[in-house]
Every structure is written in C-alpha cells, then in structure tokens.
Figure (spheres, rainbow, N blue to C red):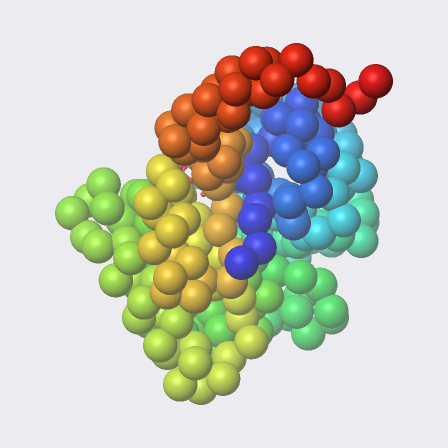
Length: 218
Ligand code: E4P
C-alpha cells in the first residue's frame, strides 16, 4: 500500500518524507487555504520534496476552464497529478488529460458507480472519501470494498486512493480490502507507528540495559 500525506504544510511533508515511507502528497483548496501560502509556490516546493505524485486541484467547474487550469498546474513539475471533482465536466477533463499522459486524481467520490465512471474515464486515482461518508451515516469501508470488487471484475488499472481518513483503523481496514493508496493527515501517519506496548517494551529493555553497565558505542 502506498502512503500519501494529505496536507500542504511543507514542514510536515519534509519531516515525514525523511522516514523514507512517503510515496506522495495530496492537497485540496481547503488545505492550501490552511497553509496560507501561494498555491503555485507551495505546490512547486512540495513537488521537490517527494518523487511520487503531488495532487493539485482545479477549481473551475466547466471542462474548458478546468483544462486551462490543469495546463498551468501540470507545468509546475513532472510529478503533478491533476485533481478534478467527480462531475461530468471533471470526468471529461480526466479523459482528455490522461489521454495526453497526465496523471489525474478524481476526487469527491461517494459511490461505487461514480468510481466506475472515473475508471472508464481513465483516472489514475479515484479518491473515495471514507470519513465524510461515515460522518453522513454511510459505511465508508463498504464503499472501498465495492470499488475494489468492481475494479477487479473489469481489470481496471485506476488505483483506489482511500481519502478522508480519520484514524489508523481506517488505514488498517483499507489495507485489508486492498486499497492501493491511503492519503492521511500527518497525525494519522504518526499514529501508525505507535503502540503502548512498544513504548513499554523499550522502557523495560533500557532499564535492564543500564544495569549491565555496558555501552555499544565506546
Ligand atoms: C483527499 O485527497 C482529500 O484532500 C482529503 O482526504 C479530504 O479529507 P477531509 O474529509 O478530512 O477533508
């Protein structure tokens, strides 16, 4: 499973990229606003921090303007992945861009039928929003399961990018189902490393090690 971080905070990206476990970044207009940075400038900086895809979202609602915006965004760097909303215009744009070899992440997916359409439009990634799905009384994991089944039935190469992840259990369940990618807020990625018994174990080993009076580095 690939790990993307869902943020436009470059300090966080830098820190997580240093683990060697980060495969890409996703941003959206809300995350750009939260960063307080210029969209083009921060996106360029992020693209230089990771080798993998960096999703940058168009804000136009019509196909023609989406294409124009995508054209500006894809010139930022080779690893820019254009993010389009799951609308008719968004999918028209997706088809045109992937036809030209540009990576596309289709975002705001809330149904398996929408995911089927995105795959037919040649999407590189489909982003089902698990957390927002759960928030509204639906089962986000059922959505991921349905999309996995449908994509496997027809051998679609579109990667399932589990998005709107709120906690480590979302990551675990997405991995069990076989989502290709999980995009997570920095705190969730850090949470994956944690276990109370790991901390307790280290504490015990160090206490016993001190009793030996030895040192590995002389
Ligand atoms: C995905 O690409 C989106 O940016 C993101 O996962 C949305 O998450 P939210 O529901 O926490 O805003």
